[in-house]
Image (cartoon, rainbow, N blue to C red):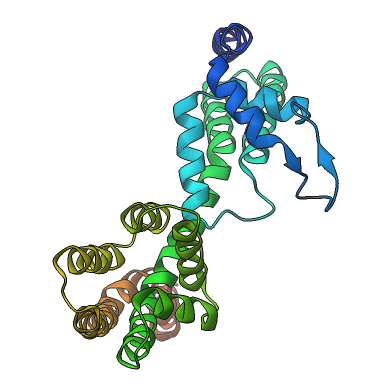
Length: 295
């Protein structure tokens, strides 16, 4: 009953906010203008303004603006999976929330114990934040992959610059020859520059999407070299050597962490079984000897 009252008390303000809160007319007109054009799902088919699905629009309006921006940032760092646009993630979160609330209310009405209520609330919260956890996990894996590919990509760009290409051409060649997320981000950064953004803005957007400290340091060095007229080849050569050194240091660090990580499974899983195998027969003999002596 307490959970039901809490759920209703939370749902009613959200419903009132979604009905009464309307977006700014200027922003609404801008979004409508951006939505004009071709539908990505059906090539050659035009979509009308305001033809977005009703439930997805309802889910977007029901979600606070700050939470929507956070999910959009997680999607950007996860590489924006084609099957998971922002509206679909918001709709899935809303469906999971309502499904778990209804199911847990029915279950609580049958079993009236405090521990069941705590488990129901915890399960509902976990279900609501599950898509964000999955996106964050995918973003972390993508960031680690970019960090691993960075040294080799800088080596390719260094060779291209020393062969006579410019920095943008070297970046384009590295993005064309690469196959990982770093190559995709390089291509997108070049596309942003071609669309009219300054290099600084394109690099800042690149760093916002990937959030890799080594890449941030490299792009800062490139921006400063562009501002002060330093040769890009020297910057690339220095940064590539530094990235290789850091990659080797990270590998050595992970190798040194292996003994510490092995201690827990060794103590909890291997040593008990080893003691049972070694001391089990001796313990059985001792018990049999004392039992026979007592008789």
